[in-house]
Image (cartoon, rainbow, N blue to C red):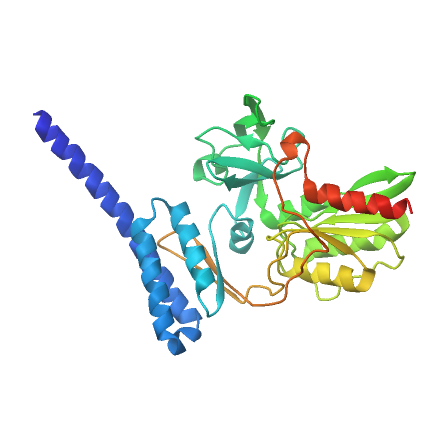
Amino acid sequence: MKTYFIVLIFSFLSSTLCAASLNKREAIQELVQKLERLDPNIKSHQDDWLKVRQHLEQAAQQSESAAGLKLSVAHILDQWGGLRFRVLDRDDAQYWALKGEDIALPGAWFTLRGAKWLVQYSANRKLSRGDSLSGKEFSPFSKDFQSRSLWSLPVQQKLMAPPKNIEVEVTKQSLNQWALDLTQQSSKRALVDNKRICVEKVWFWLDQAVATNIASKLDNATTLCKAIVLDLRDVFGEGQTNWPKVKTKMPIAVLTNHGTREGAVALVKSLKQESGARVFGEPTDSDHAPQGKESLTKIDWALVVIGDGGNIIPDQMIKDSYLNAEGVDDIAEAGMGWVRSELMK
């Protein structure tokens, strides 16, 4: 009888693993079909494409999870010499922006780093950038958490401190509305020798409404403040063709990282060229807007075609970190420090 049960359990596990592997293989097959339809370079580089395709098929066999498969696919496609592609899932802000679905959030965005979720940006007084979520059950973009109106979170706010349970209320709306609301709320003022500094943060999705809002802030900063610090880390989207030039000469610090792309890079270029802004952080991604997008049915991914546009190399290179729980945000500190020194001249 014991042997019979062992055989049953083994059969169940084998069938489960085979089904999971089959789903990943089907997902890669669908991905390959879409890539072959989207990229005309494949026809003229068949040998190179065959190698890429083989690597994608191997990734489907070897990856232990959808997250692992996504990382492998992104790495493989980065080596491909044709069009550039970005693979997005529910953990990516741009996935929600392109899908147009409502998303439940407590006024904060979470990013997965290793086995922990970190607070990436927050307008919630209970959560700060760099806080880590230690609970194994927490997954902010899962269907379970997306269906709740109250999240109970085991938050570790300092590196060696034990986690404490925090309850946060959740609101559900589109990322467009989240981005606009939180960008509007992000305006802060700092004082240096009685001189005001405008501190602004764009929240991820730079659609037309957010672009209009930030353009208005740049216009108003001329009369309100003596300097500007503009945080464009992890910002993507259309932006606008013509950004306003800051009319009065003043110190402008712009914060960037590898997630700064598309319309946000165009804004950095405009501020740098037209208003003499100084850039702090990591090199940006491409300034080209997505040229096309496809949704996959076998796996919950979006495939985005991106162009090979120009990027921005910061005036001062600083690696972005998530140590704000210890009071550290190196890029923000460098930008603010430079502005202070300029105002005190």
